[in-house]
Amino acid sequence: MSRPSRRQALLAPLALLTPTCFGDRRAQAAPRELRFKVPQGVVRVYRPPHYDAATAGLAIYVHGLYTDVDHAWTEHRLPEQFAASRRNALFIVPAARSEAAAMPPWDDLQTLLDLVARELPDLLPDATAPLVIAGHSGAYKQIVQWLPHPRVHTLLFLDALYGGEVELRAWLDAATENRMALVNHDTIPAAHTFIQDVPYALYRKRCPTQLTSLTPAERQAKLLSMDTRTDHFGIVTNATVLPMLLRWSPLPARG
Image (cartoon, rainbow, N blue to C red; front, side, top):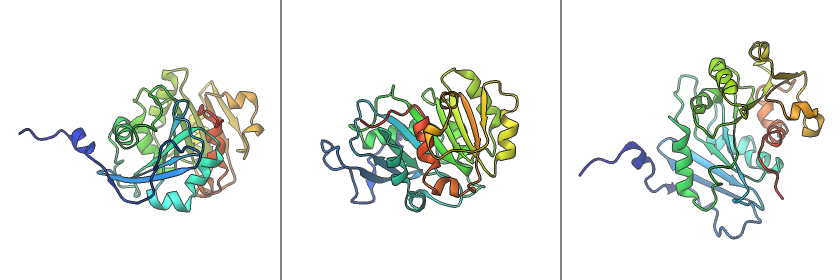
């Protein structure tokens, strides 16, 4: 008997680690959370209230260093922030590296999407739905590895521009629909250098808490860079930056 391939092994039945689950998928009015484990680590998923898979988008959030999925989920109040965005999207928070010396756990984005599709076959949006990737701090290293995937068209960097500028610029230039928003505190010098020779970049001195504070041009920008006085960890814990960026993205609003 031949040995199973690596992908077949990854797509083997997944072990649920918590009784918190989606339950009756016809009851879409209430939010739901799911937690499961795969060889790469824990994956957590949030389905917002009144979720409609037929019209939904997909959002992936990659946490930064010095935390893990479960701590980021609770300490950064990620479900509350996802809900506050008022987006009709399925939110996925996969395992990510916690130490600077560690390698990103996901070789490619499709493996993650396949695993979630296996677990949630009736809830995952269509493959043509908008897909948005957000990341904080050291998340950049994992996100840069996902740039070749054909569905990646929107990136949200929360003080995460610590590297990958060459790959990110090439990705931005590769397609008109590719867009990126940067919110910078510790990464202000790197962000200023990154945008200085990008003709389509827009810069805003202060990141607002509401999307309505952005100008029409900023809302439609291909590359929007915004500085903030909120510190590095406050950017992801203050519960205003991430929801605003998710509203800036092409994720559809909840009806």
